[in-house]
Image (cartoon, rainbow, N blue to C red; front, side, top):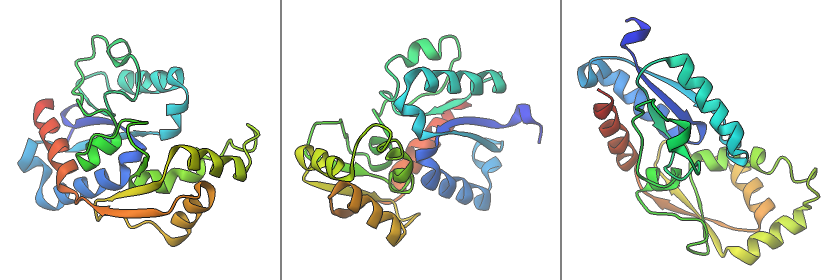
Length: 202
């Protein structure tokens, strides 16, 4: 199948565990039977969220490389000016505010509760998110104090596709002081939203 015939997706790598599972199932069942073509994904690092200019530049470079219609698998609030970044692109986008909302179906605005929400991608990527702590003068004690001030617990929305490794959960709990509570949500919520967006992509 030619590159031009592929359905193209630009995605934050926070979605990789869930999206890889959905795409694997589609390949087994025949993605071509569902949308008539294959799906190609360009994953961008979730660490780009710390710098909106870098995030915009990375998305822009991926858009230029595609040169055609694509799906943007990011939350509506992952960048303060998606309309400007994607001006004239005609991208298929999502109304859900962030990755937790897309994966769990539960609205999860920062600061709206004292729960800290996690997905498999968040737990897997946590060492990278905390990677600049020492350079910023954030000691482990300060990090745990910060989380204790704002959060009571961590809630892991478990889609069932990627169980965190014991060392991954241990690192999260050590650096935050928060115990992780598991909440099963299944893969169906995310899969439904993604497949609906594929249909809109045409």
